[in-house]
Length: 393
Image: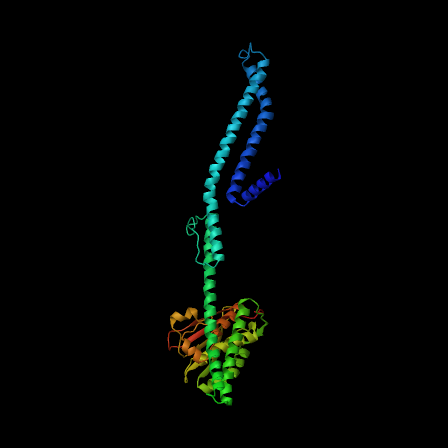
């Protein structure tokens, strides 16, 4: 007996794990409930209804029932109820057969797409991000049912996962590439010192220290990008007058610009309102842009720092230079991590490839926007920032 119950329990658990079996059991339950309802009506409601209708018939046609033995009425009703029960039994059997056919059809239409989704999700979990499922219907025409919409969203999720995985691989490749150069330089200097090829002079150690500092800056930039992308950055906003911000930047960069022979020009519209920003973070963004402008603007060139209101809620900040410019095909990508318009030129200047990425993340953290414009190579470029004005406005 226990073995029999164990087998039944396993069969029941197996049925519970299959959606097609659940659908069939639900149809079967509906049929059984309907059949039991009809049977109850036949057993308890039909007798009273039969007597009521027969009485009405006898009153309407008294001659029709003349000569009939009253005892035969009970036999007549029992025969009628037996016929009803037999008809219900056949109807129940046919309904069960119909439920099996419908369940098979629904299983193919409903369960098969879900099984495809399940198999595809398992392959994606194993790292096959190119896996997709068929979508029934057309999203553009608005004829997707729930399963079609689920399949479409699944494919979109898989595509996004593939992009994330590709970005991760590119990130690791770029990271190893960026770290290889300073590490190789440090190794070369150290091996030269050990082999006696390089003299143990302060100049050699200073070069090693420069490479170490470069590597340290790179690691610090990586950590900052990771913090900002994780949403761990905290802004300490305050109201900053535009004139105060400009003067601070000019004091910081004027010596370097004068040394290279590049003119640093500032323009502030008189009606420019105060900004509602984190002072240090905004200075970090603008310092990066001014440093890049100086780096890529030749001697005799000019860099203009411009601020003006844009509507009632925004301030527009521009850093415009007369430098090497940016080819149009590179403009959509320059704020991506490690992206370089000219890799050899950037490395020669010591850039990490993360400065503009940090600037973008900081501006977006303020609820602003940043983008670049350039007529083309050797025709200068302009970096534009939109930031919110003070809350008092």
